[in-house]
Image (cartoon, rainbow, N blue to C red):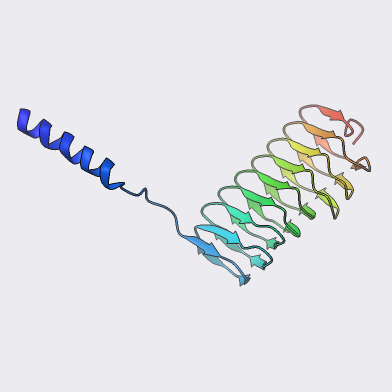
Length: 187
């Protein structure tokens, strides 16, 4: 028993010293078009444009600086995250299992889709931010955007929160289970 325990401790120590790498999902780089089919994580590299139609993503989509994503009828198990993006469009029956997060970039449009997490639009400097005709199981948050925000015809299970956007958000006809707050209290 003592020998078996010593061997197990030695094996664990050897793996620590050798730096056993964790298993990672394959990341698909998207420049151009991805049709139907299933992929793991997707990265839209800086400056690229990725069009997805009917694609199933088992992980996350990451949109890098200056990149554009147009996602139609996609199913994403994880999140859609963009920072410094040119444009992000999620539309026509897309289903996102996590959050949609865009920050410090350009235009964002989420329409006619189901978002199981939150929609977070933060400090986007150029281009309109549009959230239209969606089912959102979390919150919709728009903070410090400068290109205009329009939020209309959504069903939101959480809160609708807007603060420090210029101009102030427009829209209406949103069904919100939580609170409508600050600049969005009348939407």
